[in-house]
Image (cartoon, rainbow, N blue to C red; front, side, top):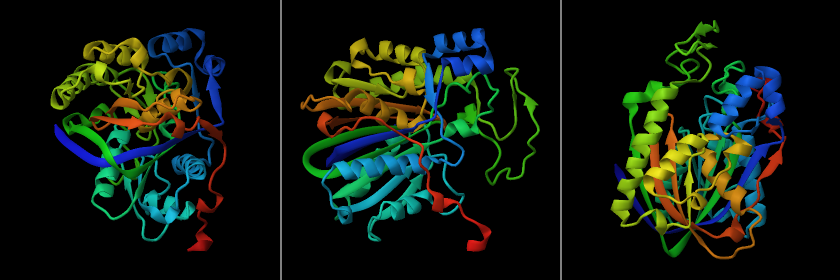
Length: 363
């Protein structure tokens, strides 16, 4: 494991946005039938997802979350010295989408901006990157943005995952604050990179055929569709992840009882229950949002926080343990404090950046 400690940086606000376009059980039944839908909901716990409309991107969702957050927190934008955008759904192959977001949010040209290309571990990794940069800078604030529209990368007839992926965007503002400690452990197992993969479209296979193939799980996909080895991912999630959390407990001299709440990546309900049991977490500690939002990748942890505390008037700070895990394979564990009064409720939007659609005449 790679262990990190960041001192004197704290979360000062959090906001999450999902698309207005909502799909519920009846929508799934129309496409996949009663039996398939019932079985899927029973095994995953997912009853509803939000999908981005065709022109709506991950950065649109992240932008709306950031705009909402910055309009609710008294912060001068020129004091935000860095922006990190975590996504595997960028607006363009080039430039980095973080540059577009820096412009849209009207942040200073003195603000460093970069993309991090990670998925379900993205919040854990993104927080570590952002807070490390902030700790070693003269800036007072840093902005972590996350966005994902994985639903656009799934074969709509793939009954194994078409009902799983929801789209969302998140914004978390960090500030230098004496006394705060964020401890993080990060892991990577690239030896299993094929476990969750979208083979085509990158520079390894830019012009692959759109022909459908019959995969080993008897589902037809093109090379432009996400493929997931369900058995391999389940084994990883219920074995490697809880083992790493227990190592984190040992490293930090804590137990599950040391935390007010435990936030696990919202993969599916059975995986969450298995991990919770293996790390000794009480059911009431483990917060859930996947039944209403599905698997939103790296956004699932901040989304679950905003879902739980966005309308909470409880002014007591909460000590959070969070674990993100998935595609890569990549995973991480972290702990930090949140103040519920600065956690905003989940917002829905259908807006998109019209100026982001580039026409050849503009070149």
